[in-house]
Image 1: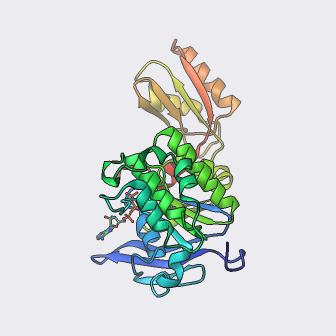
Image 2 (image 1 turned 180 degrees about the horizontal axis):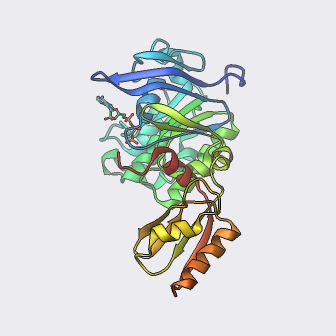
Image 3 (image 1 turned 90 degrees about the vertical axis):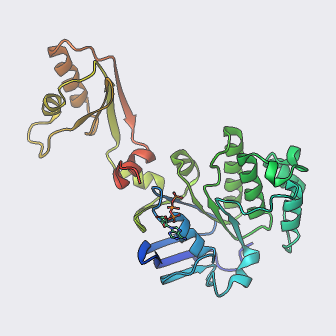
Length: 316
Ligand SMILES: Nc1ncnc2c1ncn2[C@@H]1O[C@H](COP(=O)(O)OP(=O)(O)OP(=O)(O)O)[C@@H](O)[C@H]1O
């Protein structure tokens, strides 16, 4: 249950800076998460997501800026926040020699009003591993146990760092349904993920982080609406003349030439909104050169397309 007005943000981060060895890995970051909403933080490797979440969890002290969780300071007020905040870490930090259900029972008894341990274990498919020590659990099973320990105390705010990483599709569905239930119960859920379909499926709000700052923020439909609505890809013979094709696909009077990329042998992507005229121009150009268009796809842009547009395609 929320102990404060649900109109207040459950998590509020303003101008957060965190430096390691003089390098700002979080560099003036603003973020908020609200009760009854799922906020997903996306970003390339090393963007500063985990560091930000760790500052919210009170595990790291900011170098500048403010972090408030349920109106409190995660470091100074750690004792007051502990019963109200659930944390699932990437490296779960669970004791390895204890049986799975023993860990969950132990964590549950630290809370005043814990969830039913048996029911939670059943929901997350942990019952068959009740007596298995944490050390012998698979990666995905350990993740599920970590999630169970994060939510067993009925927290008001839950931080989930890549909650379904390494999980099979069945387990991911179970995790998603638990997250949806938390939202319906008014819990503020802040999660980091690299899985764009997870963000599309779960997130009410998405914050895209790069180089330690939020570079885009909004609902998934708002982020998708900000981008060109559709993409054009096609297959034909390899090594087409991309410059000539780009010129042929550029509408008269357009400021910049349409860019065509060969994304794999014989697979192409056109970097222009897909319109009937564009498809016709492509077909005509191929027909003039006796090139068979083996396949043409007009697809809706996905969150992954938007993410790559925002953060670029270089490896981090
Ligand atoms: N304790 C530390 N000491 C020095 N550098 C650190 C420390 N922790 C993190 N970093 C660096 O800070 C940067 C941000 O790391 P962080 O873990 O926050 O990124 P992330 O967005 O969560 O990445 P990923 O998607 O890979 O989990 C990285 O360059 C990382 O190497």
